[in-house]
Image (cartoon, rainbow, N blue to C red; front, side):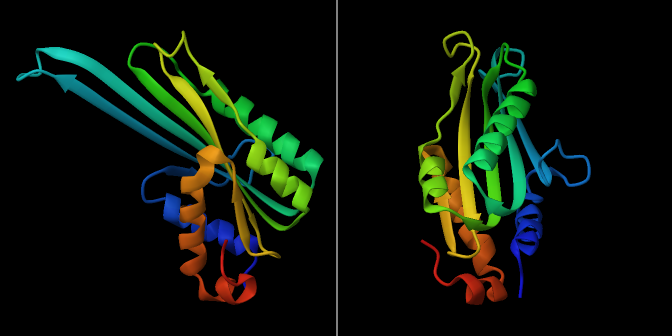
Length: 178
């Protein structure tokens, strides 16, 4: 039967198609990281009539935990936000740099999952003229078979559910996702 460690490998494989995934040199205390960078240019008729550069980034941190406690959630949350912000290069052409945290655990208290739903972080750079950073969070609890996310992390829920459905032995362990 697969564990949350196997689930981590499945997620990293699915993220590997679009993101640069790092497993060995991830920032502590994370099990892995993934980065996505996109650069777009806008121009009129010819490239010499350049209007704008648009840069979008995403930094995803993966945590692999046996039991998620309130203190551990707070530590992972703060560390992911700080590490993600340290990588942001806000300036001309910067649109957004989103920071995501995906926590895979065996067990989590209901109060911890409730707190995870309420986590919210946002930062704008020079009133949004040089972009912004949003924070997405998702917690997959193997024991309850649930995916809990904050408001901005709703699209992570679909990604995690797809990874679970791709692994039949995980479905037999966790049941239907909610």
